[in-house]
Each structure stands twice: as structure tokens, then as C-alpha cells.
Amino acid sequence: MKKKWGEPRSRQDVEVQIPESYLAKDYETQERRKLSFLLQESAFSEHIPIFCIIDIDLLPAEEKALFDGYGITPHAAILLGQTIAEPFLFAEQAAPGNRGDRISSCAELITLGYLMGFREKIEFQGYQTALIPPSPLPDTKLSRMLAASRKGVVGRSQRFLAGEYGAWHTIGLLLTDAPLMGGDYRYPDITVDLCDGCRACLDACPCGAITDDGYDEKRCHEYRNNPDNQEQASTHTVMKCMRCMTACDKKRIKELLK
Ligand code: SF4
Ligand code: SF4
Picture (cartoon, rainbow, N blue to C red):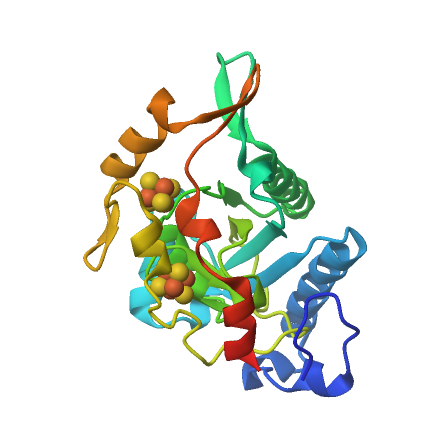
């Protein structure tokens, strides 16, 4: 079984996790297979590092409910994202726009670009979509939705730990009513708890926004948005606290995956 995104696939990788219902030979199933395959190949050819489809219809009721309330009745969710090697990509820039200035980081914009490109591909086929942007911060609900892919777990930091990349990524979701098949057979499902409770993220948080009881969004925002707690990287660019991401050691997570 391959362990890394981007490694060549073998026939065994492809066959290992396919649900029985995907193997039917009828026209409808063939069409599902074709569209899912085209999207996956598109992610390969565009060198998108993180891609996976969640078949929402196959999820247990509790997880399925996480995808309600986004304006469509989704059958699938597509994870698209970027791995982050350098926290500076989370530096926030003031980006003047026609809806007023807003703040965004390169890391989020890269992933938003992936999501918007795929939204166009899917809507062109006549299906509806709803876009859930990535978050640079702990986000319990988004992390639980991403964990429904079985390619990672929700860490104590309330961040999604995405396989060997741990918390070092920016991933968004595209919900769609297209009947896509789930999975990304390039990678095995994660069956170990990648968060071993080392507590490095809890200890690193300077304002106690992450505790054993969860994440206090208000406290985190107040700390990060206080200019005294920011680093001015250039005239229009500031670095805000990302300690709960940088404290989560990717090397240790890789060891757990071995
Ligand atoms: S203040 Fe910093 S370390 Fe604490 S939760 Fe927010 S981003 Fe993470
Ligand atoms: S820093 Fe440790 S406790 Fe926090 S999410 Fe990462 S592995 Fe889990």
C-alpha cells in the first residue's frame, strides 16, 4: 500500500477499498465512475496535493448531518487542499477588493483557487455545488467533516491532522449533488489515531484558547487580532499566531503511520 500522495498507483491500491455498490456494471454506475475518475485525474494533472471524495450517502447518520445546511442536498464532498511547508504562507495580506478590503493569506487563496476551478467543472456538468473555504484556525466542525474522508483525524488542537502532513495544510470542501463515488484509492484510510495527545498544541497556545474542553474561538480571535501579538512582515502583511499548527510535530506523526 502506498503511503505518500503523488506516488504511482498500483492495481492493488485501487482495488483494496472499493465498496461493493461501486462495482455494478449498469449505466448509472458507469456514469458515476466516469465523472469521479475524471475529477480525480484532473486533480492529478493539476498537481493538487490533497484530493479526496467523500460519498456522503455512505456515511453514518451523525456524520452525514455535518453536511446539512449549505443550501443544497449534497451526495458528495470533494476535499481539495495544499500542503504547507512554510508557516509564512499564512501571513495575512490586506487585499483591496470591490467588496471592501479583506484579509487573506496565500495558503487560503491557493486552496480557494482549487475549489473554484472544481466548482466550474462540476457546475458545467449541470450539478449544484456549495463551497466551504479552508480555515487557517482550529475549526471543529470543518475538521470533523474532513475526517469523514478517513484520511486523517481531528487532533486535540481541533485541527484536522491529514495523514503524514499533520496540521500543516489548508483544505477546503466542495459539496455537490453530483453522485460521485467516494475515496481516493491512491492512499490507504488512516486507521491509527494520529493525535497521540502529546499536548504540544495546548501548551503552545499563548491565551488558553485550546483546552481539554475544546476550542474557544472568541479567545483565539481576540489574541490574534491584537496588533501587540502580531509580527509585521511587510507594509501590508502581518503574521498572526499559528502556534497550535506549528507545535504539532509532523515527524512524530509520520512515525505513527509506519
Ligand atoms: S491563539 Fe494561536 S495557538 Fe491559540 S488557538 Fe489561536 S491560533 Fe492556535
Ligand atoms: S500537538 Fe499533539 S496533542 Fe496537539 S493535535 Fe498535534 S499530536 Fe495532538
